[in-house]
Length: 532
Picture 1 (cartoon, rainbow, N blue to C red):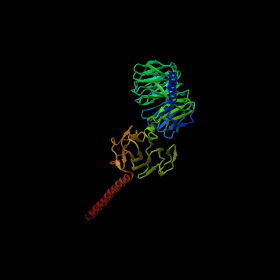
Picture 2: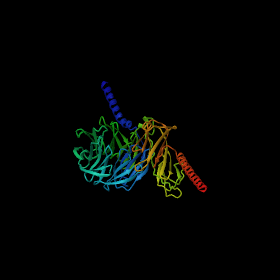
Picture 3: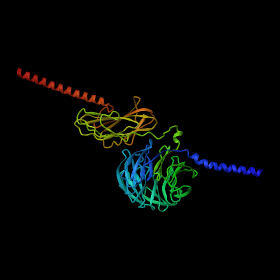
Picture 4: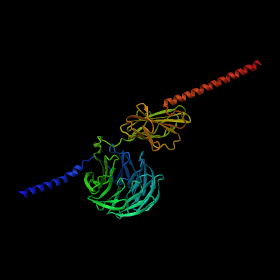
């Protein structure tokens, strides 16, 4: 009887363990794939911009980079005419994206406001991985065919140095302080360590077969190396530059990304259709997330609410909701899109000419394309065509005024009405103001009250981005541009015209009085001469 009870007891324990093992992955897989984006050709890597509004995907098959709107999860732009694009990284401010083109031995520099290539930089043989250092002044490019790393100066967009590393370098990543870079060398099964102050490789660490990606923990103490040939991840201690331990249980691991708090890693399993969830503290795989076939590149949104996964064999991109948006009570925790403007100066031919461009009820023909009003044929009678400009209409009603109040003094007012629903929200970016040669003044108004600069709001990035601190509700942002000097730049367009009219009236009155006085004086002189 006792033996039977023991057998039943152990059968219960074993059944419970088996049941827990079966349920655990299901409990971990609380995440849902909320979107599957199709149409790619040989997609490899994916990155999400610092503001979390767009994701960029390299397509090796079409030589293009596709841009995904992270709110709608639709492809909204394509950067074409590349040659086997692969690795990417943003400058810290998100204004530029650097992309390797392995087929042409070049690196693209993309302006993320316009999604156009503004520079093409020759590098080494077969550029593959790319990372920009935390300071944002250098980009390191791994040249797979040349066994080297090219160093690009961000300021000059040219190669300023080349270092020899192990065979077939692929992934590259920096320590948080930027002093060291770690490079996965696929051909030798090693990781090269670069001292960025001396621009030289100072160590070579043996890992396992086919290292392809390197990722550092946020504190910079450990490097996680995905060994695609041995289905493992090597963990390197950055103080000793030795392998601390090896984690197994993956199937051709490719990209690895680690959360900002350093507790969790997500690993793409290229031979399967899931993402492994790794507990950093214990080194254990705690679950998996089903995605598409052959996941390769992965990227977290800045708020870590969503995981974007490139499925090479899909070929698709899976968007995974990690559940954080539900915890905060916000269904879509991705920050709202920042409206941006490209505004050129306008040349008005004669005194008094003015024009009012409005996004809604525009006064000129315009094409609405890719969520932008594109004006190409605006004219003032007798003038040349005004330069093209674009205005984003998302999250803002934008009106642009431009006029010349006096022939040599040009005045422009750009106003955007935005709804602020969170503290510290960046609401408007006007693009570079360099080379304008005039003076710019700003006003931010909330409920009829002018907010105080550097207290209620601030300007960053050389007066390009407006950030509201603690104000919520409807806010109007107005930028005034002057080629000349005005005593009160806060004057409105109508007030500027009134000033011009008053000044003109005063000048005309003074001139008239002077003429009348002159005439009267001549008459008196003539009368006196006759009397004489």
